[in-house]
Image 1 (cartoon, each protein chain N blue to C red):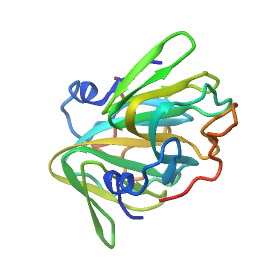
Image 2 (tube, rainbow over the protein chains, first blue to last red):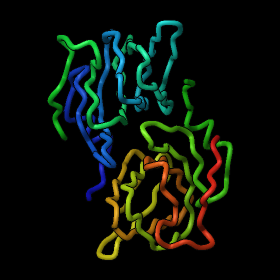
Image 3 (tube, rainbow over the protein chains, first blue to last red):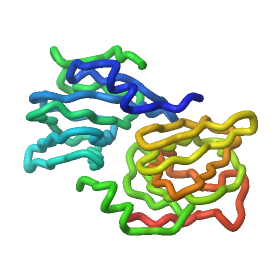
Length: 119
Length: 119
């Protein structure tokens, strides 16, 4: 039971679209991830996801609209909702989601990360 | 599915030890709370809790040690662990915990909040 400093953890990696696990509670993972560029359209059939912006900004695209998110803002995406994060510049995000969640959901491919590092 | 701005939500209340619900996902609540002073010793038999500091600092006391937490740091407290938050100055904290969690756990009393407002 040690405290976690977000900035210390963010300094430990620099790649994009590769979430790291920084905490677990009640079957949920707390993760850090850095986004840059366009991700793939996908959905999660069984997991709601929360995106909390730490530094920078990005947009979350949905099929019918786009939500712009900046630091100290979060968005909860209900299971079954197609979405795609797009970041013009690098952004750091904290994720809160079930420990069963795969980043690319129903759209496995080159960006899929199914063995996450705990840092 | 609207984004949530943390600072906007923090501006909506000023009392202490009275968590507000600002999000729900996967049976978990996201809450905001402001601490000042000493809370009561308590534990949660069935819920792990996460305390993420937004502004300010506080200490989490355990029976055998104390963890000091400041902005951009978090601590996960496993179920069954006695703890007591103490804040010398006001601190704003985001909580992640199951939607069954009562703030005073096994120690109901004057500080118990069992009907939380959603903001």
